[in-house]
Figure 1 (spheres, rainbow over the protein chains, first blue to last red):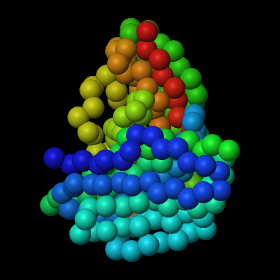
Figure 2 (spheres, each protein chain N blue to C red):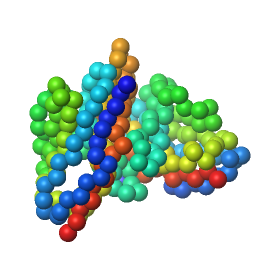
Figure 3 (cartoon, chains in turn red, yellow):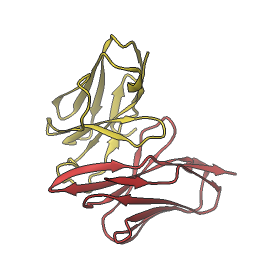
Figure 4 (cartoon, chains in turn orange, cyan):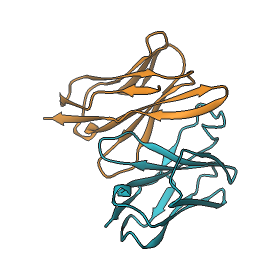
Length: 112
Length: 118
């Protein structure tokens, strides 16, 4: 079956660094997305990785290891506004039949 | 503001009612999606439209009926729903359809309709 695992909830301190992990088992792989969703709001796009390595975008970075079926989202210099759920999604494919599979999300709580 | 709007934002309906959810995107995108989001569960992709043509129906019960009259508008018609259908229904759009191979296409989500079925 196809599966994505993320921690349900994490807590971190303002100004610190936090790493949110995502592991996946899918049929074929065509990229991994990270989205941020504040409570009561729409998810917004953060990153897309399809090759091994780290992609940095300001305070947020996303890493992908294809061989390990693993990704993480790294948030630096945490701010209170970073309190949100972070959703991992994988675009898989089998015989050119694409599917977008979502994790249940990681709720990140930032404390002063 | 993501460029995707949804109405209504909140809806309470009985199991015998018929209602419709509306989504509109002002981004010139070719693909539109309906998702169901329940608490502590992954987003469930319900329907995908690419250039107004439905390309995905993930075993969604027939009490949910989508309609896409043009690339900018998407509807979800609801009838004889069940209490377990209560959830947040999200609409999204992307420049190209992820399901059709638009691999890196970022999705833009609307704010959702919070549906409660009594």
